[in-house]
Image (tube, rainbow, N blue to C red; front, side):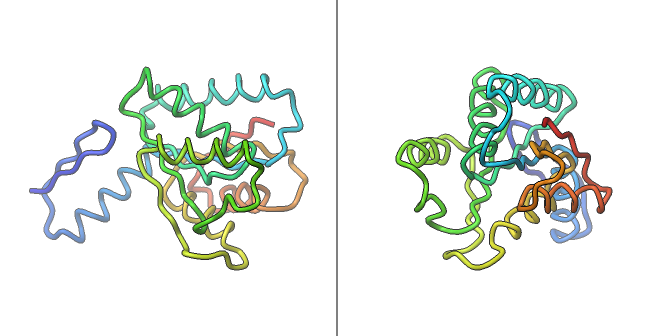
Length: 184
C-alpha cells in the first residue's frame, strides 16, 4: 500500500510496484493540474484580464483542481502566479509550481520584474528548474513540461501571434488531452 500527499490531498492505493504507483499518481495529479501560458505584454485592460483570470482559477479550484503550473515569465505568467498565491490565502490546499526553463531566466527582466519573480519563487510551493543554462527552445521545453503535467491550460493568446504561447495553445489543442481556456 502506497500513499502521498499534495496540497493537503492524500492519495492512497494498492499497487503491484512502486513504478505502477508513480504512474497512477502522475495520472491522478494531471487530472487536478492547470498550466498557464500567455503573452508577456497584456494588450487588454489589465483589470479585465485579472478579473477573467481570477474567475477561471476559482472555477478550476471549485472543480477539484489543486496544482497550478506557471513558467515564471514576465506578463501573464507573473499575473497568474500572483493570483494563485493570493487565492492560496483562502484555499491553502492550492499548490503553485514554477516551471523554470533555466537558471537565471530573470537576467534580462526589469528590476521590478526581478523583484516580483523572486517573491513568486519564495512563496511558491515548488520550483522545478529544467536546465542549468539557456539553450535554444528551452522555453518551449518548459511549456511542453507544463502541458505534460496538466489537463487544463489557461491561456492569454490573441489567436494569431507566433511564439511560445501560440506553440503551447496549438499543441494543447492538437493533442486533445488538455482543455484550453483562452482569456483573450
